[in-house]
Amino acid sequence: MPHIFGNNEHHSQPQGQKKQIGRMISHRLLTTISRISSGLICFWGCSVFTMTLSYLLKKLIRPDILLYCITAFFLSEIILSTPNKPGCVHIDKFCHSILWCLIMTTPKEIRLKDYSPPDFLIEQVALVFDIQPGETRVTSTLSLFRNPAGARPSAELKMDMGEYAIDSVTLDGHPVSADAFQTDEKQFVMPDVPDRFTLEICNRIIPEKNTRLEGLYLSRGIYCTQCEAEGFRHITPFIDRPDVMAGFACTLIADRDVCPVLLSNGNPVEKGNLPDNRHYVRWEDPFKKPCYLFALVAGNLSYIESPFTTNPAETSH
Image (cartoon, rainbow, N blue to C red):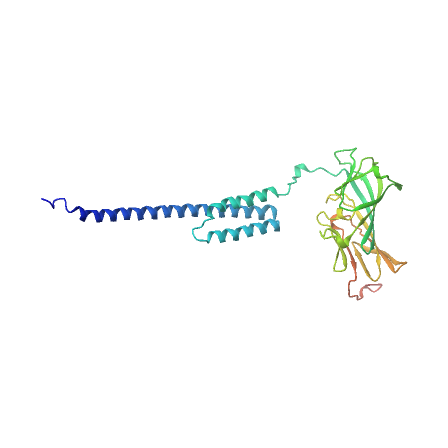
């Protein structure tokens, strides 16, 4: 009975087809698992990126880091759109790198519990700006006194400052030698000061070369200031913090042709002409304010002038 078990040649063909079908199923199964795994990894990477962007918007709001994140997102989309998604497994590492960059560049938080009042307060500030081509001389006269609420009764005087040269310092009208104070382009420190005193500091700044746009700078022929949030220190040494309120008086001196208009905070109380085609305007602000609210504008500005009547006995411009 030669045909009971059938022809071996007849059964070998279905057996080969079964093996081929098994290989196809295994291949499709592995491909499906690979795609699912790849999708999960990509989803994880996108989730990390989303969390990173959320952290950025809530905590930092920094345009430079935001630009990095947007660039990283588009690079990720390009990588994911390539055949076989070769870079997909690296998306999570890439997003983690961005998150690490955000963490490392996060500004230090200052909490209310860590607040300490300033050691010194400033009662009155008198500023004189002598605007010259290529250089501006700033004379700052500060009326300082120790803060009764300060934590250190014998603390030395520390004021914020920028990168400029200090020409002279006087304490209560007496010149101070260079070894009586220290400067490091970040702080002005004077160890030995009385409880109440008047400090006059003369320094020089160059608005024409100020490209950081903090403090006093020249823009399209107009001298202007940007003191918020910590720009005033780039003009002259000062306790540059918002809880130090002082009265400000400002005198601007400049060439009448280059800067016919001289503006600052408050009310103009005095003006006049000086030799060499120069003039001045003195401004006084009746309200105390932190230094970041100080403003100065000098240049050839246009304006419209018209009178109005406030009452029958008074006419203003």
